Length: 366
Image (tube, rainbow, N blue to C red; front, side, top):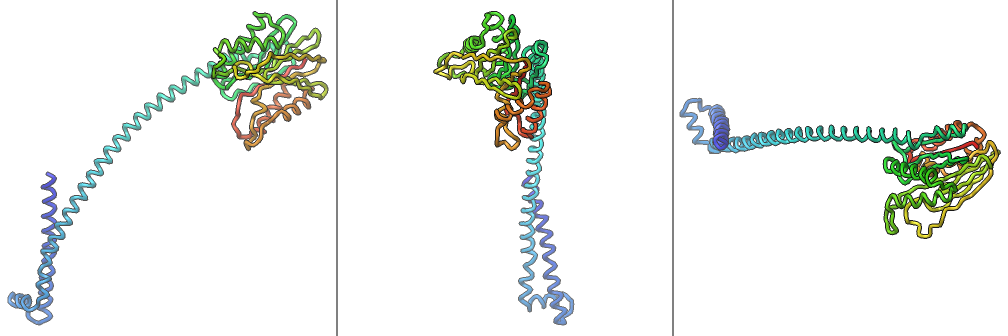
């Protein structure tokens, strides 16, 4: 069928070209006869053809125009066939794109459903963490003027405040676990329950002994052998408050504690090594420091998510100096107000820069 169609087009174009070509010798002959006053009879036209050689060239016009038209017909058919092939390809591609779009819509639906379920799971994990780890009601019952600024980077956090009353002692800690988000939240649960176990069940009451045992337990629970590449753990500042003797015992793993009195700030530094992991080959036992307090003094502990937060332009970190200045200059105010104003200061400092890590600030008026 294709060959027949091509032949038909060639013949049609050749006939049209030849018919058009015949016009040239007829018009040329008539014009020549008129100019030479030969008349328009058949004999006069034949005479004009015989005596003027130029007519012989003009007479070939039908042949050449027929051939050219035939070739044009062939090209026209090829163009038509190419267009038809292109249309078929476009239809095929359109059908393929339609099928791919359908597949993408199905995949998008599955992804959205998966993300929705993940979001539901994380939100549920947040409720569990809020109920178990970040509940500060017992702390507020024990110390009326106390405050906790808790700013997870994600929905759930690796930072958590810890409070426990054992006998006459009050234990408070600001704990910063490795990572943030879901991994950090798992570590926070491990740290929370291990601290409870060590103090409640094992009856360890000195802060340095608690940290040493906490380290051993984290290494055991996470299977961190001597040559392990797993170094997950936590930094924390741990205080034991003794109201009877107005004394605080402090031990720290990476994080210090600040003691404010009458506008002065005293810093008690922590030991360098974190809880968990085997990366510190020359690890030593954690040390304890004691200091006395007066009624109205304030102690504050925090995670490094505060001091390591970048400014709006991403050039500077918040650092320790700004935190010390804010706490020392406002320590006589209600601690909830102090934390709210600090939160505003942090928001101004961050601007549109993303939050780098979980943030925790914990303050207690003694």
